[in-house]
Length: 132
Image (tube, rainbow, N blue to C red; front, side, top):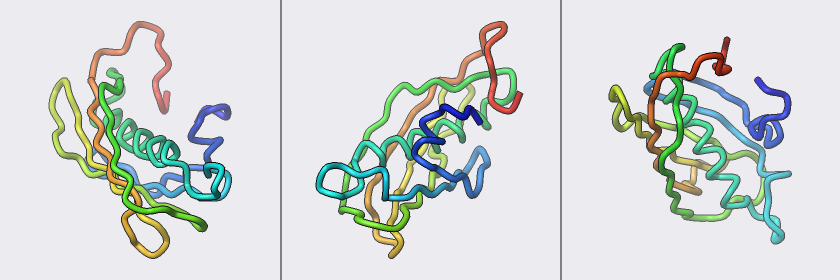
């Protein structure tokens, strides 16, 4: 993993990863807005990370996944502990991959629901690829 990545800075920890399902957790502390609540953008970063990882796994080593669209609905605040994101594949095609990501708090309450769609394309010559 790139030591300067946003994933590293936000302390996102991958717990499970396959093209069909990706699970990770992230601390609330350090990822808050001025009122001490989990920043909505942090939930979206978690969701985009999971959907992008799942899409890249589905795409395979010779292809890359590029985000096309992401949306989020914030349901409730998280104030402490960790949030867990679970990305579940909605559609895994040859050119697009879509995921629903549910972010929950330590009490299994839904904090946020996101949907991401990634374009799958051939990697440009010489482009760095995850895991390579």
